[in-house]
Image (cartoon, rainbow, N blue to C red; front, side, top):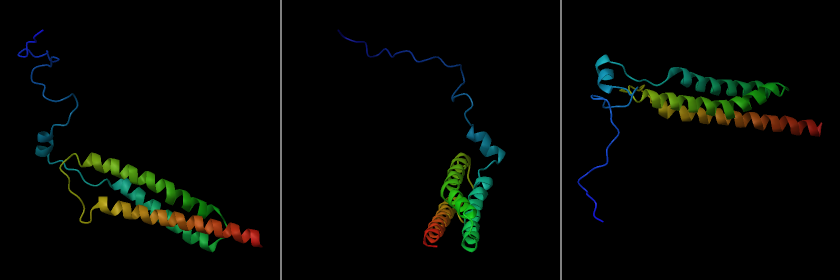
Length: 139
């Protein structure tokens, strides 16, 4: 039972001249057109807005007896900011497939720090909720 090793299995036939899959990006055309990727501004602004909204909710929650700002600060700081960071990273990875030009301070480095600030604001909101609830039991 000897096998003929010189004979290769036939490969699926492709149309002549096709070197990449349909819809693939031709990087030589991108380089000639001058298109370049940049950090996505809308997701980055959404992340920064989550931080500002959660921080403002903590400040308002300290001075009021309502739970609404504190609950809003917790939801925005703990959950929506994570969604905004994921959106930013997905868009940034898409943009990095082109020749990429970053900001002076890298947006990829700055975004997790903004998320950390949002988480701390969300934690502050939870602390204020717990503090208000414990005061209601004492009074």
